[in-house]
Length: 154
Image 1 (cartoon, rainbow, N blue to C red):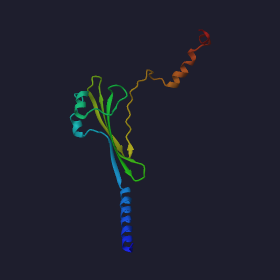
Image 2: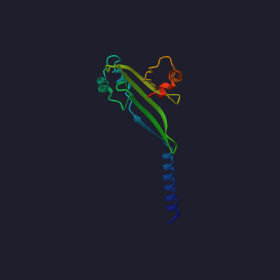
Image 3: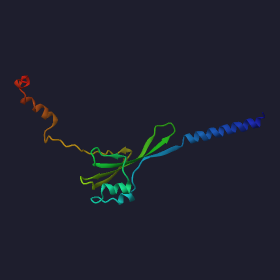
Image 4: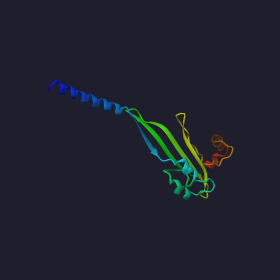
């Protein structure tokens, strides 16, 4: 083997190693989920569009509310993968469509990431039967109504 072929082989090796190194340091972006576009959402009329019309325009979501018929949630996110680092979520969009008891659109909202923090989507669906009395007060209030005779009586 001559020294020129050894130099060429070494040059190829260095070139391949440099390409692999640069490719490993390139960010890769992946999209997950589905969020309807503003044009599609414009076709949905609050107070007029039914659940079936929403299905025809933008399709059924992958996430629904806890209660049957309470709401539909379309979630989409964009992730950045960079080398061996942990993936980083750089964008998230949530479209929430709520329906009334008759299945008509009641509200359409869009949520996202703001200043790097996830906007919390919170919806209270349970109602308390106790009005104006806290849990501790309710528990302590039951002590006076109990007597030893009632406990021993079968």
